[in-house]
Length: 169
Image (cartoon, rainbow, N blue to C red; front, side, top):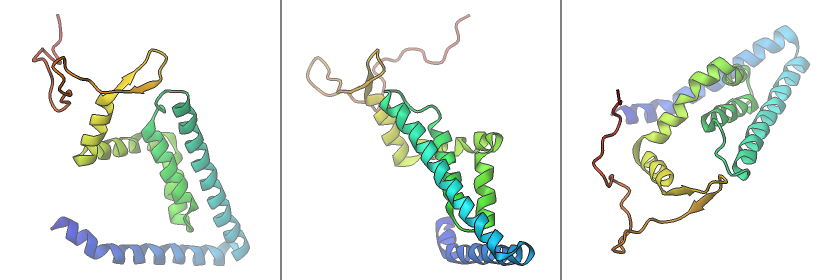
């Protein structure tokens, strides 16, 4: 029921957002002048492209070095902020700039991880993490664990019943 409500009102929300952005641009153009407003919109798009490029290159360098990019969620928030800066309009620019502020970005970093851990995508992410075998130099070696009797390892449950999460005193 909730999903159908969102689907029904989404076009109306998008239209209201576009009209609000257009109204803000027109009002600012009357106050500041069209040339300055155009320069601010183009500058926001250029800044957004630079943010996306920088976040992507940081993640690429970390990946090619054989380590996971620190803060995958930070990269996702930075890219979302860059995309919002590229979108024309001052409301999206303001939200995009908020995404780039460290305290706001830190609180928003939890959202992508929560989304990744839920549902079938979360199952796939957990399975991929379990299937990785790391070499001492940090490079990832893809492999498969085979039991002595020849059957593949089942990652959906643990082999041992050992104590997990107990504190030793």
